[in-house]
Image 1: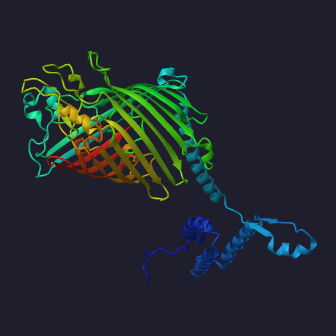
Image 2: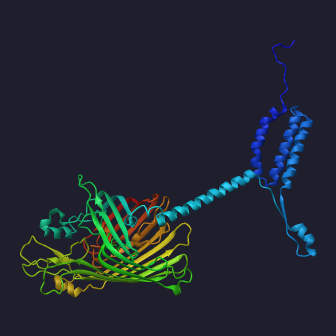
Image 3: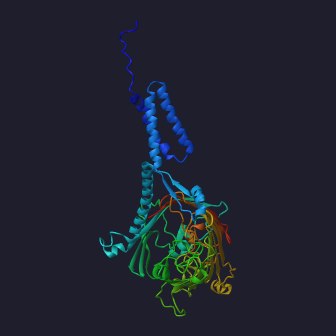
Length: 583
């Protein structure tokens, strides 16, 4: 007998049994509807549903009547949905075109379910919200919404910016270098003689160095009036070095010096489109000249004096961009910079003051939307720059010795006395420089821009006869310098003096250049302080790369290799690895 503990089987309600597959079916329906444009998917879905209903009938879960009722209900809903389609018919042009119009001019717009409409609406809203928000935020920053009335006008006129750099630097000297072969004329002049300078009388030429160095710059710009600006910048660095803002760590806790590097007042004349057509600055100002490399002027060098720049667009040569475009223009910059103001009277000299006068004229020309070039010619004349030998037992002309000197220029002793421990070295040559600067940009590649740069410097003020009269020696002329470079990488408005073009994560720049600097081609006190550790009478190459780490933070690596051109053997390599951050 069957066990009496077993409960009689109770048939399940058809709708309860159907609830699970129905739930799955309802979850699948939105996906199938979303793909309703594909006829194959629709047929597959229809057959799946019909097969499911037939299977439920076969298992006795549904009766045939109930299954047929479900099918009839689904068919009725399908007809109702189909009736909601919109049919747009274009009227035929004449009676002869009725058949063609009826056959081929009917456009059916299928019904779109509400949930699909909602999804499309939300996507459009999200995209519009991002664009509108970005535009509003940009406009708010530009116009400083909410700040004009809340803060005084002098606060909104101030603009702070700055950067910081952490550097590892390795200086590697060739084994062929000779110790005590390079006089340290800066230390000798400061001490008053070679003997008095002691162990600092010669530059290091044999011992490799590994240094950690830092640099910081903090700038404050203010708009005083519509056409008047003021600039102020604080920097690290030693007061006696005009071409380096680096501070080396490892000085037993000595604090870092912080100095005023720039202080200027500027006047702008802008056109209706906001471009500066005339720009004048006075004080301690940034380099006012177009300089695609740092061969002639170090990046950190500030000019003391006055400069005026004029930019005139070539409207008749700029049919693509129109009169407001700065891409096709000529420019002119002139300036006067006092190097040394001396109050001591000298009977046989017209002036005791040292000056630098300079001018540059050039053209910016865009050949196409992807090709542009800048060419400039400059003339720079140094006044009272050569050293003048003293009369016997006199120091009246000591002022003619240079305030700053690195290495490379031809120097001679200005002292004329019987003290064998006293020396003071001045420049043997005069310096009147002509400078040709060129830059070409191609931006037709999707991945990167390509920049080609070149500079040529000639000291036309070099005179062997004058030098022989000052020094008593015949010094062969070495007065030419040149630079050739290439940069590939992230798009950048300019690569003036190889400025950085990386501002975001993943952006990159590769660059390389070769330079050749004869000893009296330019003042060694103002040229690049990194290549060959500064100075002239050197040649070699540089390769480097910049890579963006985050927004406003990037990594720079450079390898510089140099050799002497004339004189004692001296070769060295410099490795620099920088982490930079700006704000």
